[in-house]
Length: 237
Image (cartoon, rainbow, N blue to C red):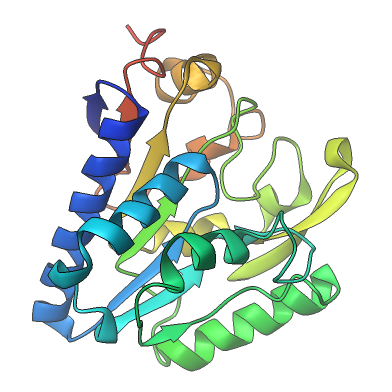
């Protein structure tokens, strides 16, 4: 496990932006492109805004390809759309090579199937696709992407993306599956706030199951990178 603790949410976002810049440069030097799945949430949003405002000239945006870890069942212009958030924060201000959004306006089943097809078309022979970076957060219940506790998607191992009924939210989300996330070259969690501290402690140090704390399913080959603020770290031993 790779863990860094930052003094506050702003410092965390700034560190995440710098990390993004470094990973873009390394990937493009090695493979000629950078592929990233973006996360929703307020902490990633701040990082995206910083990238578009303070680091524009440090990123070869023309070779950056954007994907998403999950999406709500809403159209792209909806205020709850992860795509809309990333567009307003970053994508409206830089010119990337391509953007591959999850089509939340379709039925969740159609959206997941379509996204899986899009991933396979883009990554070709890579099975599963290997993204350079997948950015994630966690919820106070231990979920990540749209892998929520005790939901069907936690058991899906033969799909790249899947629909996931979340009964407690009375909705169906679209999400990358755990095997797709774990295939990435790097997975980085951004976690801020005391309200995440209990879940974070259980994920990193507790003995609960991944069914209860789905972020425990995220186990890429080199281990996940945890970038957290001081408030989120309060319960860690």
